[in-house]
Length: 342
Ligand code: AMP
Ligand code: MG
Image 1 (cartoon, rainbow, N blue to C red):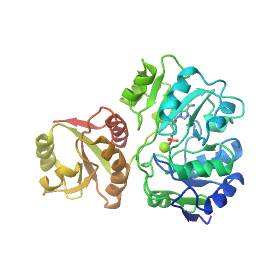
Image 2 (cartoon, helix red, strand yellow; image 1 turned 90 degrees about the vertical axis):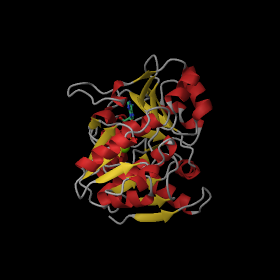
Image 3 (cartoon, rainbow, N blue to C red; image 1 turned 180 degrees about the vertical axis):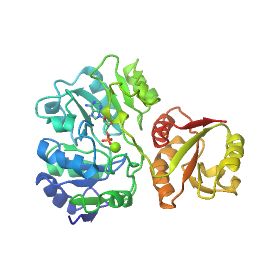
Image 4 (spheres, protein in one colour; image 1 turned 60 degrees about the vertical axis):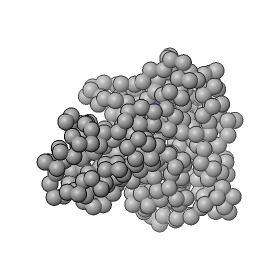
C-alpha cells in the first residue's frame, strides 16, 4: 500500500479536509497529538477499526481510546456523564487525560475490546482537533507504533513502523508531552488510575479527592491476573536491546556500569551525566530533575538505542513523583521489570 505523507503545521491547513475525507472513507491515518502520534480511524465503524489492530499487530482484546474535538461528541458514546467526570474535564480537557465510563451501544465491541466501558479523550493538539472536527466522527486512535515497540513521538518514528501499512501519515513535527495520556476509570469507585501520564496523580486528587492507583502501574501483573487495563498485561515499549534499570545514585550507577558494560552496551542516562561517563556511549533521556524533559525524550531514546544496535542499555532510575511516575511506568516496561539495586 502507498502511504501518503501530509506535512501540516497549522489547524487551518487546506490538506486537513483531504485527511478528513480519507477518515470518513474508512481509511487509516496516523495523526499527531500532544502525547504521541495516534493511528486514527472512524470509531463508530467496527470493520474499519479492525484494520487498526491488523496494522499494529495489536491483540484484539486491548481496547482503543476514542478521541473527540468537542464536548457534545462525548454524550452519545457513554451511558451517562457523572459529576466527577464533568469536574475533571472542566480542569483538564482538552489535554492528556483519558476518562473511562460505561459505554453506550454506538461504541462497537472492536473499540472496547469486548468490555462494557469506553475510554474517551479530547486532545489539546489543535491539528488533532481540527482533523477530528473535519472528519465529523470520533476517532479511535491507539499509539501509531507496531505493537510492543516504543510509542512514536515524531513522524519519523511513525514512518519507520507504519509506512506501507496505512493510508496516510500527518507529519506535524514532534509531540510536546512525549508519553501517552493519563488513563483514569470513573466506572469504579473510588476512581482508579490505570496509566500515569501528563495529568499527574496530584492533579487528579486535587479535583477528585481520593483515587486508587492500580497495582499494574508499578508492578508486573501475575500470569493469571485480570487486568483492569488490558494494555498493561502486554509486552510494551520494548527496544530490541535489553534494558536494565540501575537503582542508585550517580556514583553507584557509574561504578556498576564501568564494571559491567561490554563494547556494544550504552548508558541510558541524563544529560548532566554525559560528560562523566567517558568509557561508554551515552543516549540521554532528559534532565535529572526535570521529569517533563524525560517524558519528552524517553521513547525517542529507546528507539535510538536500537538504531545504534546496542546490546544492553543501562538506564538511570527516574524520580517517581508527578510526571516522573509516567516516565518510570514506561521505563520499567521497556526493561521487562528488570531493576538492579546497587
Ligand atoms: P494506547 O491506545 O496505545 O494509548 O493504549 C490505550 C490504553 O488504554 C491501553 O492500555 C488500554 O488497555 C487502555 N484502555 C482503553 N480502553 C479501556 C477500557 N475501556 N478499560 C480499561 N482500559 C482501557
Ligand atoms: Mg500504545
